[in-house]
Amino acid sequence: MIVVTGAGGLTGLAVLRALARRGGAARAFVHRDAVATVARSAGAGEVVVGDLRERADCRRALAGARRLYHIAPRMSDAEVEIGHALIEAGRSAGLAHFVFHSVVHAQCDAMGHHRDKRLVELALIESGLPYTLMQPTMYMQNLLPAWETIRGRGLYRLPYSEQARMSLVDLGDVAEAAAAVLTEPGWDGAAFELCSGDRLTRVEMAAVIAGVLGRPVRAERCPLDEWQVAAAGSRTPFQLERVAAMFAHYDRFGLPGGNARVLRMMLGREPTRFDAFVRRLAAHGAEGLQ
Image 1 (cartoon, rainbow, N blue to C red):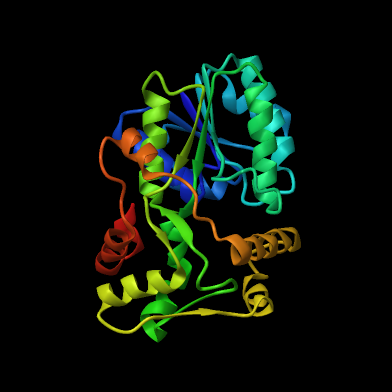
Image 2 (cartoon, rainbow, N blue to C red; image 1 turned 45 degrees about the vertical axis):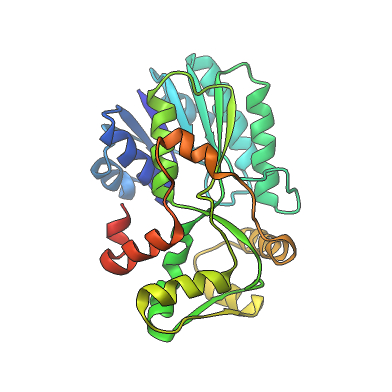
């Protein structure tokens, strides 16, 4: 049995679908009853509803499991606490493999969510459990919230420099690699930085999108406070602070890391490139990316 935490989110559902394609038996650990049905439709054979902050719930979710794919809640103030609780529960359960969904360049402490993932990585390395660290870079799917504005107004706006160079990866490729790690032997003891090979500025992304849509698309930097007002309804003050720090880091350094050879080796094929992703999105919408 493979347990997937955060299984009701974008990444968790993608991992469940990838496991289902390989015939992997998955148990989804979700926070609310409302997403249990969605997790089952993505391929989960079992669903546990609970709170990752509660150690008893972590132990209940891992009972009888052999492998764990841990996706932490988005920019949570309890990420390190949750990581330690799951490591403790994993040791008690005798897990054969703990796979942690981390982030590329977890060493960049100026971004708090990167730092927290680095601390969980360290605890896992020192835990004695067989482990794998999955370190994806920016998802191409991050384009989705802006897609209607891009198509309708020809604007791609975010609150950091449009010249910042960003490494990109298709979440579908990340999920496929995760499913391989969880269902095949020999992937433990490693850290894998996952990227497509595309290192693009937002200006260059806009040019790709314009070529696919056949009309002009312009990249712009919007004021941070404007973005924060729009995001306040879906993010906590803690998350808004974390995101602001992330944007400031992107503004100075971008996020250009990773080497496509890693993902190519894991997939046994070329990773999805940004132009192919945009063509698929334009032709089929978000549903076509699943």
